[in-house]
Image 1 (tube, one colour):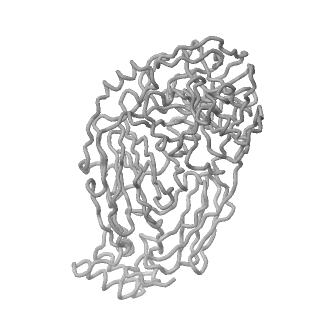
Image 2 (cartoon, helix red, strand yellow):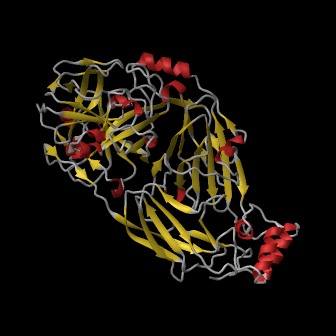
Image 3 (cartoon, one colour):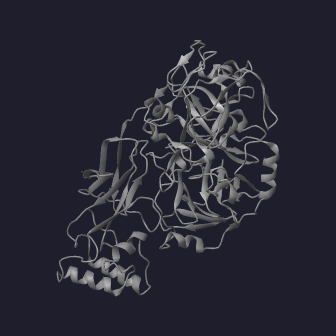
Length: 613
């Protein structure tokens, strides 16, 4: 899946055998992070007029061979765990550019409640292995790295500390400071789903929230996925020059959040998930019309059903019924509308960051619905057909009045006359001179899901019923003689859960050898052969191996009982999950095929894993 991740709706899990996720954080911090000078940073931002930061860097890196703990597993793999704590932080953001590309390796990030926030399959990453993790809410986070054969050397290069009063929603009054993030925007902002207009709905799918990463900290902006004349789905993002002005941008760590929105007109009670791409390259920028063009490092899967927005570069174009789609205060996606004819501003504009933009380079707009806030900067400004004609520079805005300036797309086209200061070279590389371009829509596609079910020692398990569930829809299939299963033509863009079940003879696989092995384990003579053996032997479901389990197995072999009463015949675990093992594959958002959704089948009572189904 490269670096395309769903964030925020992955299920809570626990690690290292602890019974509850919260117990992760009973462990003392491996690394106590220094607290940066937040007051100084906020004062600097207030004086500079630059896009305000919500996080600033911590002078500490994490090195896997120096920090945290490496623990060997019975199967020969190693698990690295490291708990970070930053006193009074509201969130942590981490970046890495040195993840080793080891097959079957995985980096997981958990928040302070023990909820899995992000998971990276390292073997699927690009060669540079650059990634931005978070924001991980709270003052603590827990990292794990699974290595298939030995401890490996990698590092978390940058750690950013999010301020309490800059990330969490604060005051309830309309004009007061409300923080940043979910639920933080002013109440007059309108969710995209509230507007029943097909052009607005389509254009809104191009809008993204941008986490702008600098050496000096991190800020929020908005932007849009933009189409080019070749319509080859190059992932260009259009935003604002001032979103990076005055800082040292680390574009390779910028993160782009798609579909961060409410699916209904009402604000959701819980924060919705979003889809994420990390990493980009600068293509062009120009202060006079305040544009910034970036190219993301990864292509966008069809299943995301994104929209590459079209554009109109006609000079003198001043439409009515224009609109903006944005993430005010880094909140979920909103739409603002102007039902009047816009005007071209005929005088220069002096900005608080020291930039002076020339006359005729901006539109002047007075919104009739919604407003703009910090985090809206760079948001796409659309004509009635949903074509981009500019991006938000700034102005004065509230829930009672709005007066905004948008950098004109037409002026950005030729920009400063060079490829790194104009849009033309990137959006029309063949110099066709086209004046308008419609958007390009990705449509939903289908894919295949599958895997293999084997016992802990590798014997394939046939006749297992595998269930694929999405909402109220359920599909089933049966594993073949090789233990393989597959679901074909599965619609992409939805969430799924895959589970497995098999019923049968409880005595299958149970032998005197299992009783002998359990007896030796109970008296301390021999260890069990695999971690799954302790599950197979716990036939009374007490949570541990005891003489009670021996008694049940003896009765089963002597035909004194017909089967187990506290456990099923078989239990199935997802391959590679840490203890306590997950019993189903959860796919929060299907965006690619996957034939490695494997299960480990454990037959209760078969402690030595001798059964060949």
